[in-house]
Length: 141
View 1 (tube, one colour):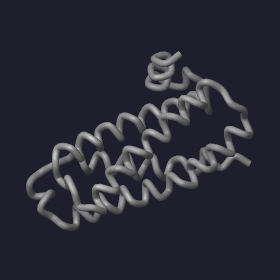
View 2: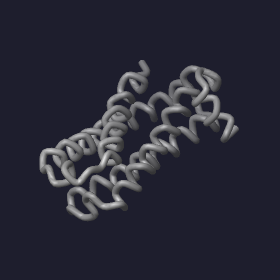
View 3: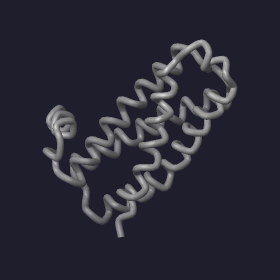
View 4: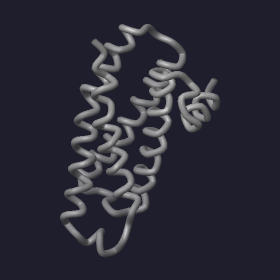
């Protein structure tokens, strides 16, 4: 049984929402400690929920076989988790919080998660399932 499609939406939703929250910046929000903990919670649980998602992705690859598309999807997935994990480490160290650098990491993470999701959509539903998936798929193939 392939659980990957059921689990993948948790880290996608949490990490996308985290990145959007990080990119929405105002002085008032940056001074609010609740805003910090809200973003931290989204980031922490997004990275944590990516662990079973990656494990089920490996199992899914064993079920459906390997291909160049699946390898590209896997590589983008690992890159996405690496970027968000770096941000999480920075949060734990309390470095670069509310700085331009962390927002750039969040923007990079958002771009990577979009590409990863589109490639996953191409794996599950074909490369022409929607215009974004088609554009990203045809950028690489």
